[in-house]
Structure formats: structure tokens, C-alpha cells
Length: 209
Length: 209
Image (cartoon, rainbow over all chains, first blue to last red; front, side):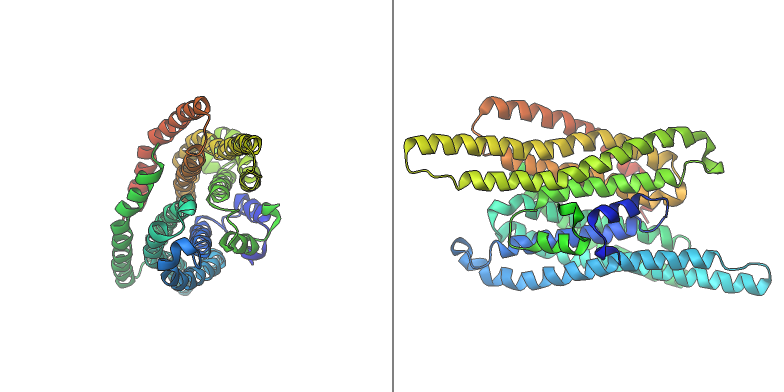
């Protein structure tokens, strides 16, 4: 599995001429990194005298951030697997009309799966970003650069996932499916957008020199 | 070294209650991930018949992206080491006046080093972003989501590095040094800003549904 490789080997495999892992797995990894930073800030806040009044809230949020870290990590591998299935489908024979129909159906099915993975990333980002804002505002203020990097990176994970959904959905022939996915995309991106100003606010308050 | 850990263990260490590795190492890692994606797109372009006219240019750029991947990877560890030095300096004795002076000097020195590392990240991002735009525009268009994720992530690496510079510089007492760093920050962020519209253009052209 990709997450069992060393960071250095993961980077080397990413840089190689094989198209997978690619941007889809990186989107999921950005989600994992952001979740891990959020977990760290929760741990640096919970049970600290100065943060007594938010300790219970951040303890509960820590359970969520750990859940999302694991989910995003699972999706790093799933994205690469789904991409390989697409590549295999494109290699199917297209000699006869029957071949062509079968191949076309296999490609559509593979592309659906390949867009479902970044859609999960986008969904999790839209959920997780709410917690990241709470952590930045209420968590240990010595770790404010960490929680701000987490919020920033979550947003990038969301946009990167969106790129990967669109590039796959564009090739899908099942129009009903594409329309349904478009609705999902709008729902999640609206939620992420609604947090954009809060992310900027955190940054501007503290880091704009 | 951090880059010798598995991705899973790196994430676990990031999530732990130890403040390092933190957002600074993640900023550098984002630079590595972006560079690796750029290398991949170069490799998927060079020597392809369809991209004959840009083959030489992208072969030369591949050398750069591989250089930056290694530099960013080195900085993942250096940021964590520099942070530990800061924490050690804060633990120095402060019983006598002499102690206090020595401690204060040690903290200032450690903070300078700790802001120099993300400054290197910011500098490399400002150089690398130019190549990322060329790769997105001229590289293999089947990998457009990968090169777009790379450009996006480079920008995030730059902003994340900026957060980490500011949080350290804020605590430094040597005002001449702080002023000089402010100039450097402005130079690099201006260059990154000047590419923002190009990054958005690539994205809007291709991925805004």
C-alpha cells in the first residue's frame, strides 16, 4: 500500500512516469496531513489549565479529526487503484461492435468509481473544515500556525479533489449520473466556500506581515 | 529522518502531542509533492510524438523539478530540527542576569534559524511556480489535473511557509534582522502573487464545472 511506503519512496513513485499515483492521491494525502495537524493542536490543548473551558469540546473534536485522518489515508490508495481500473478498461479490445459496447460500458463504470473517490475527499473536506476553524479559534494559540496551515491545506485538498472529479466526470457518457454528481459538487463546494472568509480572517489577523 | 518514515508513521507523528513535526515540515512536504507531480507530467510529455516541439524545454525543466523535490524534502527534516533547537533554548536556565542574557541570545539565534528554513521554502516556491505554470500549459494535457494540483499545492506551500516565518520572526528581538527578513518576504510573496491569476486561469479554463 502507498501509505506503507516511506515518504521518500512515495515521492519518487509520484515523480515517476507512471500516471498513478497522481493528483487524486495527493488530494487525499493533503486531507490526511491537515487532519493530523488538527489532531496535534487538539492534543496540545486538551487538559491544559489555560484551555480548561474548551477541553471537552476539543477532546470530542479530536475523535473526529482522527477518523478523518484514517479515511483520507484510505482514499490515497483507493484513488490510485481506481485510476488503474480506468487504464485497464481503455485497453479492452475494440475489434467488433460487441467489443466496443463492452469496452465503452467498462470505461464508464471505471470512470464513475474514479470520480467517486475524490468526491469522498471533497465530502470529508466539507465536513472537516468546520472543525479546523474551531480548532484554529479555540485551540492552543501557540500552535496557531499549525491550525492555520491545516485549514489552508484542507481547502487545497477540496479544490484538488474537485479537479480530479471534473477530469473524470467530463469523460462519462451516462448523463443522468453526471447531472447528479454536479449537484453533489455544488453542495460541497458551497460549504467550503462559506468557510473561505473565515480561513482568510484567521490568516489576516495573525500572519499578514 | 522524517522522509525515511512510512507515510502512515509520518502522519501519526504529525498527529501526536509533540509540537514537531508541525506546519513548517508540512509546508516543505507540500513543495515536495508539487515538485514530484511536476516531474511526473514532464516525464509523461518528454519524447512523446504529440509534444515533440516542447520536449527539449520540458526535459530541461525536469532537471529543475527534481532538484526542487530534493531540496524541499531536505527542508522537511530541517524544519523539525530547527524547531527542537528553539524548544531547547527556551529551557535554558534563567536564574541569574547572565543566564537571562545568554538564554535570550540563544532563543534569538534559534528563532532566526527556525525562520530561515520556511524562508528557503518560500524562495524555492517563488522559483518553482514559474516552471509549474509552463508544465500546466505546455505539458501533456491528459495530466492537466496533476499539473493543476501541483500549481495549487505550490501556492499553499508558499502561504504555509509564510505563516511559519511570521510566527517565528514575531518573537525575534534583533530588529535589523526582522526588517531585512520583511524585505525578503515581500519579494517572494510578490512573485507568487504575480502567478496567482495564471493559476486561477488554468483552473477556470478547465475545471470550473
